Structures are given as structure tokens and as C-alpha cells.
Amino acid sequence: MIDIFNAEAISRAKRTCREQLTLAFKGIRFRLHADNRAILDYLAHYYSGLAWPDSPQSTPSNTAERSIFLLDQPADTCGAQWTSVQRKKPSPLGLKEAYVDTPDGRWIHKVRTGMVMFQSLTDLMVFGELQANHSQVVNFVNNQFLNHYQQQDYLLGHAAALTCNGQTTAIAANSGGGKSTLMLKALETEQARFLSNDRILFRPDNSTTRVLGVAKHPRVNPGTLLHSRRLVSILPEPEQHRFANLPEQALWDIEQKYDVPIPEYYGAGKIELSGTLKHLVLLDWSLESPAETALQALPADAIAEALDGLRKSPGPFFQDANGLFPPEKARSREAYASNLSGVTVWRITGRVDFGRAVELLKIRGLL
View 1 (tube, rainbow, N blue to C red):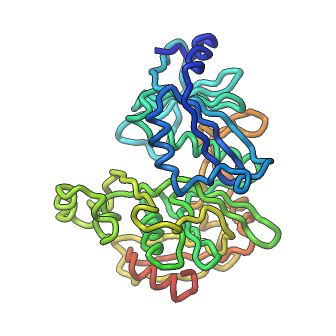
View 2 (cartoon, rainbow, N blue to C red):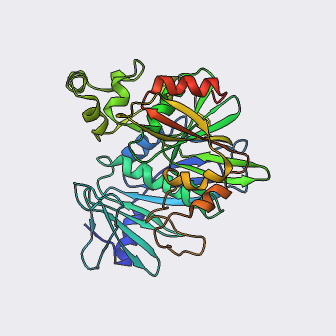
View 3 (cartoon, helix red, strand yellow):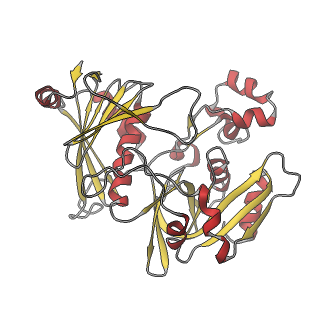
């Protein structure tokens, strides 16, 4: 067990990281160093189709670069006073994360899994059972991508997104609102390309808005899979039978995530992780609504007040360019509205009906 507050112990641990992998993304490259080849093999497979080829032709010489050390060893979290990360919606499973700040950066403890991560402008480290918690390793890598662009004044949005015929549509809703499911339904359109599952980065660019997706495959609940002929096989057969007999609301409420690898289930060439944001669709529907599913454009003076589903706090991993960790707080509605240059904002209301929603998106020219 490594004493994470002992500099010499950390230095010794890092020297055991002899395995390497490079992951290149738009504008930034990560050099991963690990003491266990297995986690790098997993990441290489996971990011296949999401990361860029790391070559002089595809990665410009001015690309930023960060090193990340992955240590398949437990960390000793004793010897410090940890601060709990408060969530807007507390989980019935209890505390998820805690952190402690040091002069060099921030230690973040994933309480339920025992994983420990170090966030700083120089050394980036992950300790714990890496293979058992590989999704948290993926999230840590992606958090560095998010930090890189938030430090360049991109706003973080809570949205799924896809690109179709050169224009990107983001779909925003509160957690569990159906944005990932609608995005995957829309991805059935031949020209549609996956851009992001539940996080986007966006910033005005003259009279348009640039948008970046996060290199992470969709993670969805059973209902999304059960009602998709393409994806239902992701659910083991016993689970299919169990979930098929549940009432609609009970199925909607289940929180049990499954990965949907886009290349495997939708084919090659279905990923496009950057684009020009032309449309933002806000989901304001419900299973109980008696009204028909409808899609309307919002007038300009109503947009700011409607953006709560898009707003997202950067979270405890966000570190600004000066090395500071700002208080966790989403930017104002007005700040989000001002970043939507050239974007038409739509609202879907009425009864939840994904098939009808896709029809409406096609009628209005979003697909």
C-alpha cells in the first residue's frame, strides 16, 4: 500500500511504470505510463475509433502533451482530513467522492471503489484496482481533455450530441431524461455520426459555435437496449426476460449502465468528435403526459431560462490554468445562452416517444 502523502514513496511507485501507451485527441496528446500492461491494452481497445492516430500527419507539432501514471496498487488514504464532495442529488449508495488539497495539487478518493487520483498541472496519477475499475480510468483521462478545453474558455454542457450532414445537434436534459436514448435512435439515420454521449464542450467562433465531444462510448440503462433491435444483444438473455416484464416507469427508473461501443454496433465511420453546433434540443417531456410529442423552436427571450438541463458544474477534477480548483458551480444561464451563437434552440414536450421525436427532427431538418 502506497503512502500517497510521502513524496519518496510516490517517486518509487512511478519508477515501476515501465509500460507505455500514447493516446492522441484533438489538440492534446496523453503519454500513459503503467506498472501493468493489461490496463493499457484495455485502453488501447476502448479508444480504438475514438482517439486520433498519433502521427506527424494527424497530430500537429503544437499539440499539448500530458503524462499520466497508472499504478495497479492500493493507496493509503489515512493521514489527511478528506472533504466530502456534495452532490445535488444524493445517492442511496452513500458518499461517492472526497478530496484533499495539497500545495502540489488535489487528491481525489473514489470512496466506493477505493481508487485514488492525483490532479495537478504536472503529475497526473491513478492508484487502485485498475482493471476492476477501468471506467474510472477512462473518466480520469477524459477529465484531462475537459480541463484542457475549459482552460481555453469552452463551456461544459450536459448533453448528448450527433452530427448529420455537417451540422451538429446537441440534446440536453436532466439525468435520466432520455438524451442518450434519443441520440442513439437518431444515429440510425445513415448520415448521422456520434459526437458525444453526455458531455460537450462549446464556444462561440465568430458567428457560429464550435462543439467538441468527449471520447467515451455511450453508457446506457436497460430500457435503451431492450427497445433497440440493434443493441438488445448487449443485455444478457436472463436480463432481457427480467426487464421485459417491468412496468414502463419501473424500467425507466433503473440505473444499471452498459457500454455501447459505437464501431462495434453501428459500424466504422460513425464517429465525429467535433463540429459546428447548429441545434440544441431540450427534452421537457414525461412518461405521464397526455399530450402528443411536439417539437417547437424557442424564442430568443425564452432561451436563457430554459437551459438548466444543459448547465453542468465542472466537478472536483477541474483545475484552471493557474492551478486553482474553483468552487463547484455551473456558470449562469446567461453565460450559457451567450455561448450559443448561431444555434437554434428547440424544446420537445408532451409524452416520451422516441420514434416520434426522431420523425420530428427529420421533418424540421435536424436529421
